[in-house]
Amino acid sequence: MKKHLAKITLMAALVVLSTVAFGCKGKEKAAQSVGWKKGTPSATIIKEAAEAGKVGNWGLGNEYEILALLAKYNLPTNYLSQAFDMDGFDDNTIALASAMTYNELGLVQNSYDGGYKYGDSVGTIDMNDEGVAMMEDNIFTTKRFAAENPNTVKAFLAASMKGWAAACANPVEAAEICYKYGSSVSAGHQLHMAKEVKKLCETNTKGATVTDYGAFDMDAMQQTLDIAKKYVQLSDTEAGKKFASFTLADIMDVSYLAAAKNGDFSKPEKSSVKIQLKWLPDAQFMGYYVALDKGYYKDVGLDVTIVPGGGDIAETTAVYTGQVDFGVTWVTNLAVADAGGMDLLEIAQVFQKSGLVLVYKYKN
Image 1 (cartoon, rainbow, N blue to C red):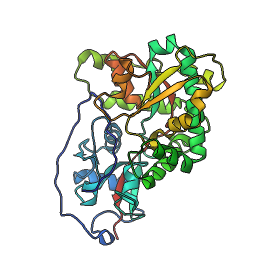
Image 2 (image 1 turned 90 degrees about the vertical axis):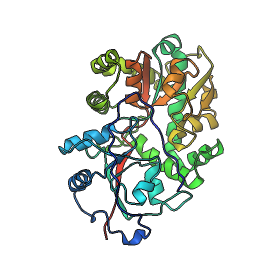
Image 3 (image 1 turned 180 degrees about the horizontal axis):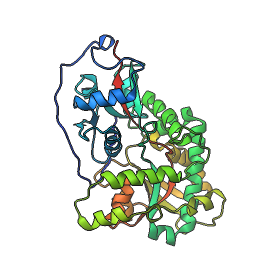
């Protein structure tokens, strides 16, 4: 079995799963008998794959864009339970497989360690182009911590955004820095990730260039919340009611980032802080590693520890319980956590568009 890195989003939601087996394993990638010809409309590909029961997703919180996409085309909102590798795509069990541009898609296309070597023989359907994009990596803390430590929050944001700007300006260097700090992936994949994450930070859901790192695109944020409200199903009735009532003002605050960028802060109230990532060390989080490596946190009076994610304690829980001061999560995760009483607050939106695509094979 091929090895690769995949991210697991933890969320208290019900997942609709479909299990459809298909076909034999295709060894000769150059002579695929499955897939679609180049130029086939996305609508056709989505419809045919869905009707064949061959759309895949991991579930566990990653599925809402897929559900919205299927609903857009008036298709049943069922999908295959996709494993955290791309073997199902490789052996044709899944014809239209979920992939993050900076992770699984790179593994499908490239030939470095763990890669499937498909090159340009695959196509993608982009959630941003389809109008169902949901916002992903952000920075958050608790409302209480932000209120009690405003200068700490602003200083952390100022240094972090400087780190993200430097990382995006030089993704090759950023990949090297991430690798030095204990990379969870190969050097080749790390570089791929850095280049793709740069795109997520500097391009919005409409394809426009973004130069204001961490900025809040209110239309994209609202779309995320609207899709989440439609498809997230919480087992706790009271939490469900609270979730349904949320507005953006309930889960985010733009004032800390604005003050940070203006330099409107003084000595941090708490100088030693921790941030927990959503997953293991890699270029998905390159801005924080660059800020640490280049001394940007020290420059604003902070001693920052970066805590890897992917363990037994989710980033939302770690921040809520005070084990760390800041975290990286997705907007929907934060809103669900708040519905459950965590009282978390988003303070910067690092990724400006969705990194989720559906990948399919071209038919020769």
